[in-house]
Amino acid sequence: MYQLISLLSAWAIPVMITFIPLYAFTRKVPVYESFVEGAKDGFGTAIAIIPHLVGMLVAISVFRASGALDFLMGFISPALRGLGVPPEVLPLGLLRPLTGTGSLAYTTDLIRVHGPDSLIGMIASTIQGSTDTTLYVLTVYFGAVGVRNGRYALKVGLFSDVVGFVAAIAVCLLLFG
Amino acid sequence: MINGIWLGMIIIGFLFAAVNGRMDEFTAAVFDGAKSGVTVSFGLISVLVFWLGIMRIAEDAGLLKKIAKILGPIVAFLFPDVPKGHPAIGYILSNMSANLLGLGNAATPMGIKAMQELQKLNPDKETATPAMCTLLALNTASITLIPATLIAIRLNYNSADPAGIVGTTLAATAVATLAAIAADRFFRRMTLLRKPPKPPSAKSGSAPLAKTSLPNSSLKG
Image 1: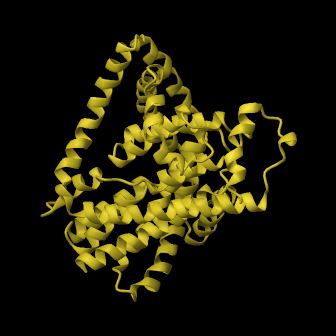
Image 2: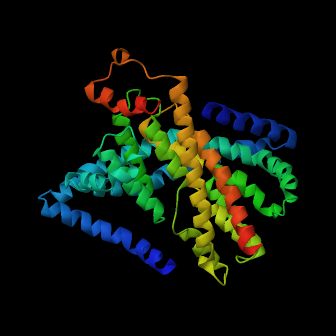
Image 3: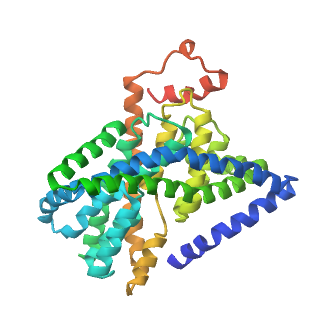
């Protein structure tokens, strides 16, 4: 199953990039001109995201560098230690929705120190892989279209992060604990 | 909420920096953060330019409409207020399948394109529509079949079974996605109950806009 999915994963992009223009060509679409026309929007969209991303990443970066995040982590870890959850993975729950690179670095470090096949390594990998960086996704997607009021999207994203975090720990404890 | 979180992180950061004597780190962090904001955005240029070009070909060939027509019913229940056969459906489906296959590079441009299409249906350009919130819910939970980056890292650290996390990740991500969809539904309903849709006469939007808000109001009952 895994082999099949990873094969599909590897083939998906090359097949799409070959098939889409070929199909369009049979429909008499001027493929190259069409490509250039669509691609023009890419630059502007990326530039439109800059202010949003700069603002958000500055706040997150300040929050981390000041020691506030460490404090919060130290505060939460003992509270959940009693549940049989290795405290080392708990900071990931805080890092994951905030910074993709930060939580990936933290996960990599846990894997390096404790080993990829340890319980901590398994839990950390699962947490990292199971959700995306909520704040980043929100910033980029809303930033790209200039929506200021995201309504309840942030609440939903953070809620699913918490659920994903708990589910990742639970399923790993169940299988490898 | 986003205003509160943003301001909160900066103020709490300032207070902690003051107590911990980390003012220099605070300043450095500001410019580091700003720099990575620009770097990340610039990194998006290449993938956005390329994928938006490819997707335009797909759109011009009528491929997206076709996909929307064939697979549309699958997402119709998630996006009840997007008209059938609208190009947004095609982009939403492309975004979802790219996420599923773990193709982050392709998923983001398609998601952004889907947002732009949804924005065309939006009567208030500064406020997110329920459909946008649903798309974001799906993307923040980001259901993935293959966590490729992590498998690579695990391989790097000599794991006996690098792909051993595929099953656990799939389980966790499925639960997170279900939670996201459920929460999205809950909040969507809550906002509809709290703020009943304006009567059609109050809407300055054109006919198609009024039409798209129809299924929205029917959700209320």
